Image 1: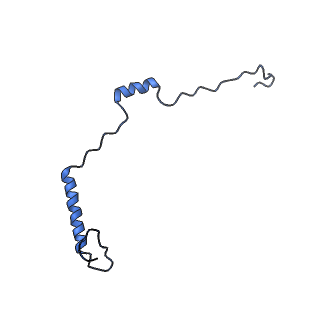
Image 2: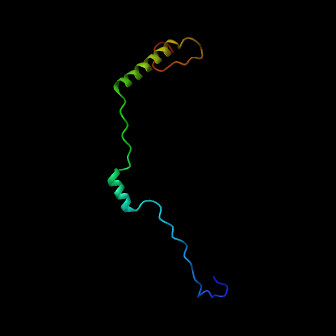
Image 3: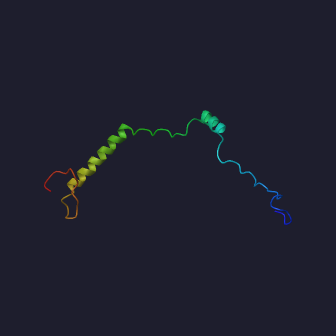
Length: 85
C-alpha cells in the first residue's frame, strides 16, 4: 500500500500465476494412446531344467546333512533325515 493511500483506494497486486504441476488431461490421454498403460511386463517363467537342477542340488545337500549329522554333538539334525533321533 502507498503511505498516503486509504485502504479503499489501495492497489492490490496479484502474485504471479504458478503453472499447474503434471500433465493436462488431454496430454495424459494422448500419451496413453501413444505409449500404452503404465504396466510392467510379466516375469519370465523359470525353465524346467533349472527347477530340476535346484531340486537335485537341494536333495544332495539334504543327503549330505543326514550323512554328517552324527559327526559331532553340535551338528543339527535336518528334518526328514532317517535314523534314530
